Length: 164
Image 1 (tube, rainbow, N blue to C red):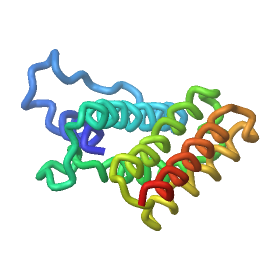
Image 2: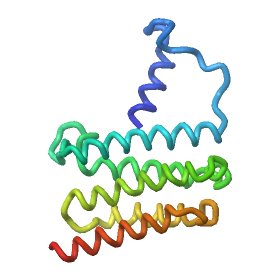
Image 3: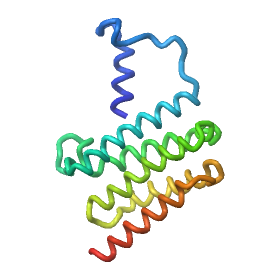
Image 4: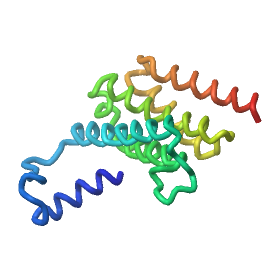
């Protein structure tokens, strides 16, 4: 969401930037375009977070919230909240690419649980359940991402029970 806020700020204060930095938007985005841009933006943030996680750069005591293991759940919840406000056809118009990006965002929650070394919180469970429902609805569940998310979630929970 911070990137979105920075973009909005830049357009609102474009007179402070060189003309080559910020160009005027000639037409407002349609809901279809906005949904694609928003989910893509959040997916990119998650991809950066995953990179930081895999390079052991995240720390829950970090002053920067985006450098915490718990940050993924915030992004995932925000995306889920916005997607619940959109018409299903808007999300489906982008094909399985949208399903894949939503899957990747949900997988970050699974990775957060795995990376924290603790059992999932009720908040984690709530957000993951939302993604199970969303991915099950999109394209009638006719994509591989719902099953892949369920398998990943079950395996992390099984590992958690074996290593208390």
